[in-house]
Length: 231
Image (cartoon, rainbow, N blue to C red; front, side, top):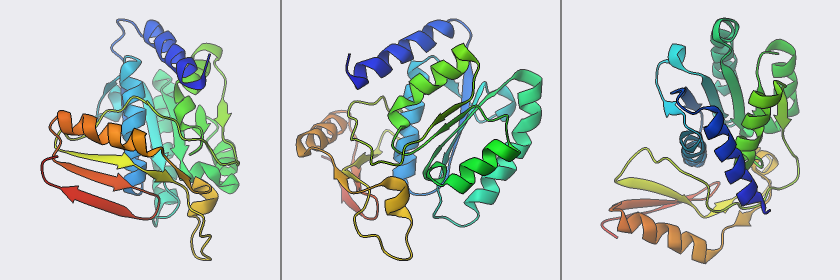
């Protein structure tokens, strides 16, 4: 069984666990458009598992954070939000999952494990595609999950995606960066440059055009290109 099919099986298993429960999730995204695109994929996975999105934290059964380590005050915002969730964790056992760039920094994950031991899942930028598996293990085995790797991840096609708009859409064309500028942490948390197959990019854009999207933003780790107008 390939990696894509394996994650589909975990999505199916969680959907069976959640059948008729009407569970809900919240997601908070920090950072750039690439993070926003990643969050749309996480939302797509969650909704295929049977969860519905809510803006009311008290209603949620899962609280998901997609973090950034470039923007100012991101760490303070994250830790503040985690503090707010402690009571909900005690009251209703809400699942708390944190992913994104900040999780590639060891001092951050060490602090979370030490100061916020009630967090259930930590996953990095290279293991986002494995979120269904991590969530299933957390739910079924009732244990803490840390799924973070330092090596460069692979490009994973065909992930579910729940887009925020039906007019504008973003399409990732490349992850990572090879420049290693002295002032920038991106290559260390996103890895080396890895480009998608051009055919996969074109196919995704064509599918969006067929659905009536009028503006496509092509995303790479540091730059963006915007095409406006009906496709």
